[in-house]
Image 1 (spheres, rainbow, N blue to C red):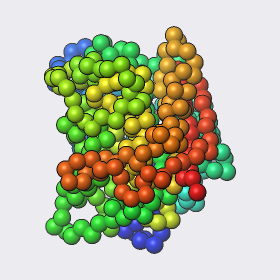
Image 2 (tube, rainbow, N blue to C red; image 1 turned 135 degrees about the vertical axis):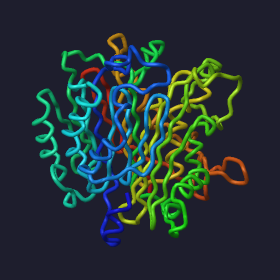
Image 3 (cartoon, one colour; image 1 turned 120 degrees about the vertical axis):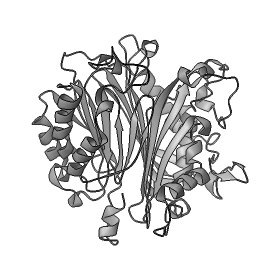
Length: 437
């Protein structure tokens, strides 16, 4: 993240990321070596050696800082954002002037030769509108060039602009399954008991961060300082490691010098604890990470969240992405409700403007628009309802959870855009907000 800044400390850095997600099979159960795999063995794309992925990332112009190997995925923390590898799909998220799409041909080659996955099931490419498009390189200089580049690889792609062209908007390119089906399997099931889970991704893309929030991401690390240790300590101080229950979270964080921050987190969620629910709606669940009862970690699923921060005034930006479903009708002990999740993230970064997207797969029996409209209501309640905008903060003070720094209670937002989309097998909720004057 900091490389562009170090090259020219006076030039702006492009925080908004390019997000490439490629599915080679509908689920992890469908990769060629799944049937013969043992419980603790890696299959599919996860078998690919790290050096081979690093060669691909050289093309993209970023490098691996560290890796966390989970039970369902491997999370690579990059110099410019993140790379997640599942048995059947991967996610490449890069910021700055990286050449994200230039890595695509090599990814396809690696999948075919190293994992026996010669064809693409679905491909998604998305990004927020750039702050400094003139600084981009290759096809990333212009959305039309990016679409043309992808169309030269895929013959069944569609491109969309979501939101105000002359304001904050979100760009999406996606392909349909080769067999013409709109049905999409769950994101990473190794066990068929979870076959009803949706593919679920929420992004919170924040700009114009308040000065007290930005200042925490500046650091003067000496050569003897460990940027991972500093990043981990900062995660604990700001409550980033408490967004989900900390005892179920493995966080890999990095503080850049002179400024910037990145983190990947793998989170255990669900399991038997999720059945110890009450009747209250999880939209209003503000748990503090405490749980009742016991459950084996084998009963849990694994999800991720990732955070990246560019704190400089003039182009400050922070992003949060997560694939853990925030259930909107059932209280759980491991997953915060959508309102709580949005408030926890926004309270840490205190943006002046933000866009939220929820991208979720749907089944034929689900009423169209039901999930995304519920998400839109949650977004609005989290950021505009006077009874709920209470300045929640995960920041730790004296061993407990603080209620935010001074002035947080007055940070209420107004919605400036609301759009729902239905694609083949997916629905999208997009909303933009800005701080009330």
